[in-house]
Image (tube, rainbow, N blue to C red; front, side, top):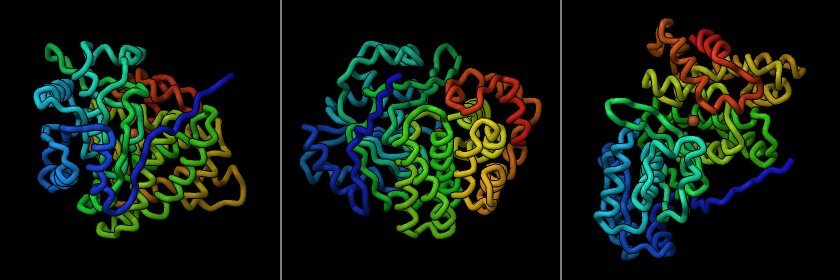
Length: 383
Ligand SMILES: [Fe+2]
């Protein structure tokens, strides 16, 4: 057996590093950048902060600010037209996972004659690099998209909508710029749900059975950081130390997730596409049942997760048993809903959501194999 381990992204981290974007852009040989963002981030003045930094380095820029929460192929196409129209040679994504995902994919559309719908699954091999360079500037702490090779997009074609995942090393940003000041304005609710996504990435990656000791170490430390800082970031939104820590944990979750994820992600992604449920919230609501389901297959790892999250017990069995309760307790402290029902999901929708989750490759990384019936049981246990 052989495996490939890579941690290739250049990462700038710290208060004020957004001001270094101009230098990074110039270093990449850029003359004109397209800033890809959403209206909310632009209105908050974060895109213009990046624009100023580009200006200072003599790099011209245009702005595409029409990204929405669940990005579509139409948005990617329009962004790639903006890129070509501006004769741009660099993309700078400023925002949450949606803006970064659109930025990743527009580089493919702008330079290759290939339909996005054909890039799902094995189709990603059709992407022939190198693509125009990408600098990713996250403004939330959750997706870790700035260090991941994955982009998700909803294909809109002939009134049919289909969500696809594109995974290719060519999609990796060249530089990730992590400035925690950019997250100071996040609402407590969004801080909690995005923070839970970072936690879910770390927990599911750690529990996934693939051989990747470095990702395991990154994931474990990520869980520790969330355990120590998420409540503080929610309670005290202007606490820069807590914001910095959560930005670290989010990035670490993105790095660790290359190892694999699990059933909570398959369910959360299906709940996102079928119910428009926020991805981080869906992770928070499904994770406890998944930890219980997996316990028989990986008690030791579940126990380690439980211990970090504050579960009490003197032996592996007790700690593993208490792990799901520790996640529920954190969820409660963050004032998140107590289950899918409270979040608006109804019983009659569960079979369809389970079928969509069963088709999602995310659950293939789950430590205990699960089919559509198992996923339906997990949804019922998460109500
Ligand atoms: Fe995720």
